[in-house]
Amino acid sequence: MIKKILSILMLISLLIVFSLASFEALENSNSFSKDFYIENTYKHTGSKNLVTGIYLDYRLFDSIFEASILLVSVTGIIFMSKRDDEVL
Image 1 (cartoon, helix red, strand yellow):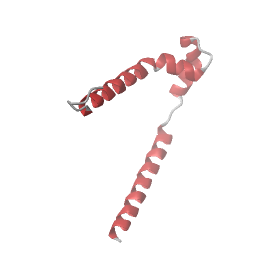
Image 2 (spheres, one colour):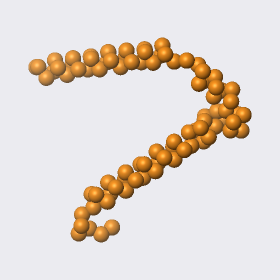
Image 3 (spheres, one colour):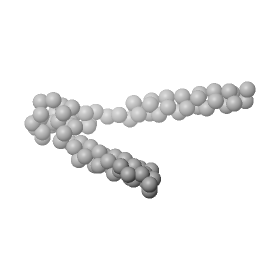
Image 4 (tube, one colour):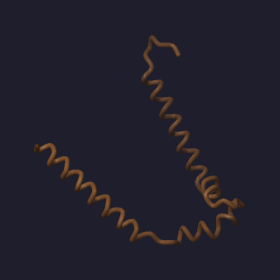
């Protein structure tokens, strides 16, 4: 019974925290970055598609580094989980 009450209280607390955080994010959002990307993406990238221009020009290196970190992590996990007597 106590576990149920604690679980419900934790769920309610998380709901309150996330709702307050989302309201705070909505209040602090400004349109400067949105306006900048809408006005300048075609000039900077030459792409007519706004999403493609942002992803392939502004976010390309970030995505490449994220993919390489994922590759190194997976390789490390495979290497560490391999037994000495197994051969791939």
